[in-house]
Length: 127
Image 1 (cartoon, one colour):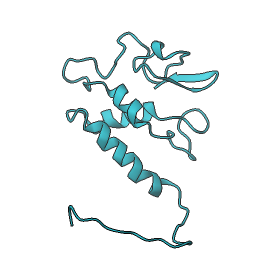
Image 2 (tube, one colour):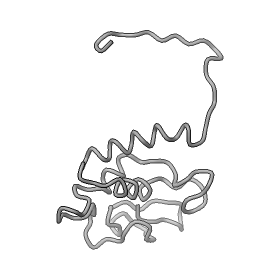
Image 3 (cartoon, rainbow, N blue to C red):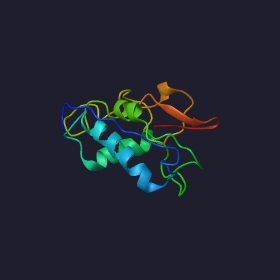
């Protein structure tokens, strides 16, 4: 019940290793809810776009079967979203107007609309 404490005990062997979309889905869903809470006027496509563009690429460049778009970055996604999804006449989620869009190659954060340039050396892109 709400407001009451609970104790959970575990024994050696109570843990199991799982991976894949079944394990990633609850985490990415939580990040999506957090990001969407910043601007409820955003569409699901807006949230999907900001999550994919701000993810930390883990495998080969771009989406791949092993890592999808990469590791969700909640703070980066909120920053990239800005305060407007583009429908209200604001900055369209761009915190650095005139900066390069997500996916463009970059060498420094200041070159990107989101102020976020990430990736492996020699293969950095705006997020």
